[in-house]
Image (tube, rainbow, N blue to C red; front, side):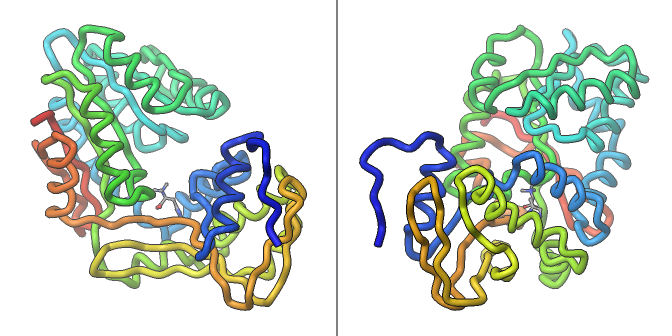
Length: 322
Ligand code: AVJ
């Protein structure tokens, strides 16, 4: 049934897809949703009214711009390092204020995609001329390591969008610990965490009536077709979202509507799906204060301040080294 490759895989994508689709239960990793098409779909998700996260965080940044900016400041100025900047819509609220108030700082957006950085740099330069922007292409950790000795200034590390929510707690701790290790005692981490809330609101955000989240989730199949010679028919899969209010975990699945075999050329393999068999594709973790405190503590960080939106849907935390 399976043809186990005797030689190595060409890419991590190939290897991870093979592992996920030959496991039981099946899974695919959400990080692979983000090719060029996936990036565009995520952009559309952030613009939907149902995806409350964007506006909640934007609201916090708008309401508390001045105190946030003040907390970033230090005698010798500071470097603002953003992991996963995207289109910078939210960050620009802070950048504009920091620029107007003549704070002494550099903005260092970090991303794996050179393209994302180019677009961001151009829009920042156009909208906020005079800003000192130094894009850093690379993985978060490689870049954080090199930035640790990049300058003697205070580092403020920014992670917006509740991006940590795609990680299981164990991996979230590892992520936070990696950041913690790159921090000097005076440095700080400013990070967004989507909070537990009415479960219906969460389900609506990840199961929108426009079908954008469905297309985003199914982009995994489309990408396998495109890059690995897969023969998935995305219409034969149903996008399914669950939310467990106890653990705070929202999960996305693709469920096969029929018993089928899907050929994938790169593996010379037919993957069998029973009718209603699932592929787990993503988690979007929701947090409460206790869990944030615990994750931070495990990573050697402590909460210094928190900012919440008026409905307490979302919180941005400032962490320091313990
Ligand atoms: C980018 C991980 C924050 O989980 O809310 C949006 C990705 N998935 N809709 C999230 C996503 C489905 C998003 N993060």
